[in-house]
Length: 446
Image (tube, rainbow, N blue to C red; front, side):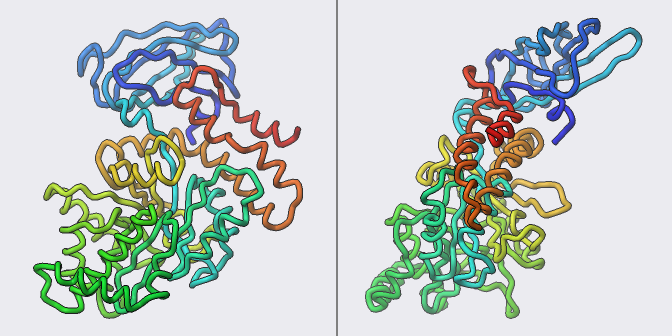
């Protein structure tokens, strides 16, 4: 988080494009000096403004009142904007820089929610309990998540049940990673109302008969095993949708000892026919998976260049939620959705309002997806998520303490509930609410 975001509160940070907004800058850990002169310099990052592309707007002289500077500014187009506040006292001057983003209405009406749609607990090949993983997700800034154990739907229900009697803001969804018999393709059922693998397990004859019917519709695939794999995937993705879930085609270029885990003809069929709901572009939990991600992003871009509209997600596929363990928190999805609710998130992903994020420790964060969303995500990484994630950390810490038996944790979580939503209200300019971070800490003491 930049120093200006610590020293001041800028409200709003996100505005509706092609409108005039009232901007306030409140001094927190510095003070505005009554004897000083203040002026605002405005620069649209992409140069679109009311004065043209290369003629800068005239400087606005402003005066603080009760520690707050208030002024009006017109924001043209969907872009990032720079506001430079210059303080002059005698011969000395100081410059503070603030950033604002203006959005077209379709995106302005959506909030950015971070989530991980693919993780494993100790019920399959992970290390920790579903409840611990859920709390850990909130602790690192996730707004939604799902346990997706191998052929095991029940752990995702346990993650929900652990926090059933306590108030919190993490959306815990159901899920599983499906491995049909004889089909190596990995598929995630995110948010489905029932287990697809249990359908297979409970009536394999019905499964094979229905897949056989689908095989007869597969064209331009010559290998019999590949034909079965494609048909099996279609069957699974259809069942996921029947349960109102999101069917994810996982890590197509995952490398195993003998090559990519599925053949090129299966990968190509998946991209050409898109029986899935979302493509896992970024993910993995081993170091070599970085190479796989590079290929997945390249293939995604190539398919988009052909005119295909491909919904995407990023996931950790984490097998441990301990900080410092490879992959946890390093890959995730930002979904731009009207609500942090399962159906809204799924519909937003399907409608191409998501980006896959690579946030490898020690490296700059990178977002992949539609250009306008990637551009906006770069702003969110700097200007919005740091404070959002601090609030999530507090909540996640007490979620951990709750499952460890700390009796007061439930009361504290009740006080914290709604803080991230109120932060977004302030960032997006909801006029009747002003967010104060110190109120969060104060609430914990009351």
